[in-house]
Structures are given as C-alpha cells and as structure tokens.
Length: 275
Ligand SMILES: [Zn+2]
Image: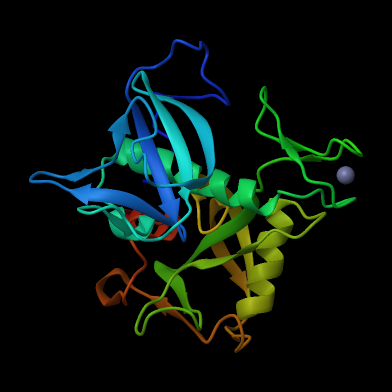
C-alpha cells in the first residue's frame, strides 16, 4: 500500500551541516519521477550532492531520512532526462520501485506541488519564504502562513445481503467499477460526507458505518478515508453525472476493479475475503 514507510523520519532540514552522507534524490518533472532501469530493479539518483551538475532545478526540499539515509525532493527545470534515465508517473512505478522509496516519493510529489503553487501569498500577493523549522511557507509582509494541502476523501463499501455495491464514474476505464467516494466538504463530518455522497450519487441510505483504513493518495493531495456500511433503504438511482452506473455484485461476478495500489481495491479485497 502507498504510505510513508515506518523507517522514514521526516524533517524539514538536515540535523547537522556535516550530514553529507549519500542521499536519495527524488527528482520530478511534470509530476513524474526520474528513475533508471537496472538489471534487477529501478534505481533512483544516489549521491551526497546534487547529482546532475549541468542540470538546473526549480526547487529542492529536504524530506528526512529513509533507513538512516537523507532524502531530497527536487523539481527539474526541464523534462528532458539525462541519458539513461527516464521520467515515470508514480502509478506506473507501483511494485517496480522499492515500496519505501515509492512512499517517500508520494510525499515528495505532494510537497513539490505545494511548494510550487504557494510561491506568493494568497492574501496580499507578496512572494512567500520557506520556513526552516516547519513545513510551511510564510508571507514576510502580512505573516500569512501556507501549509501543505491535504484534501480528505471519504470512501465507502456498501454491502446488502452478501452483495457489494460498485459504481462506474465517467473517468473510469471501460468495464471498471469501484466503491463510492467523494470529497469532504467544508463544515462536514466524515459521516455526514458519506451519507450525502451516497444519497446524491446513487440515492441510497446506509447504516452501521465503520471506519476501515486510510491511505495517502498523491494525485494531487488526497487523504482517502475508507469506511464500510450496510444498506438501509432506497432504490439505486444514479445521478448520471458523477456516477453513470451502479449495481450489486456477488463475489463470483466481479467486474474490472481499480488498481491494487488504491484504497478502493483494499476495500473490495476485504469484501472478497469475507464473502
Ligand atoms: Zn501576505
């Protein structure tokens, strides 16, 4: 699952100036990560200083330490990779890149995007400055603070008489279905967001909401918060906008499912293991 590994210690700056041991460099261009195929796996740049002397960056951020080794995120000024290297999206790196590095890359991608999109104060327009002691950008004119963005998304698996509700959104690949999900709106609790989304998208009511698990999802900065629920009442009536089709499925008639990297897949796998 996509997450920061337990052996990663986040920090906004190296503890000591002498911390010059080799570091992982998570270098992005157009939200894609720089990797190099080797005989056994994919490699990331590994060097104690910026590894591509002739190559400019738009920004660099210290991330912390993975298994005792420093990690840096950077945004390249060009999307043309050095010879032998290539840029790839994080979705395509699942199971190909080391799990721990992929988890750190997920955070790196979100921090690069946040740093890039908060260069100016949202309140007065003055250029912001990066804070050394915390993950924040501060406006020197009006003291407005900008922190990394996180957008909570609720996701819910609804089961009725042994069958699971799966739905198709317009953006899905042909034949693919998933559990319902939606952004939490300002002022809502997670539970309210779930009941609202289900009512809006498929016209159902549910009961017995239970927390399942959560997962970071860096496309671009979501926190997926998954629940399970039982059907309570109503007839399926899709909204035709966010949801095109929704049906009850049994374990032996499952449609195309989302990526094993996703929270939705875990929710569905858990259903299949218990039915
Ligand atoms: Zn300001």
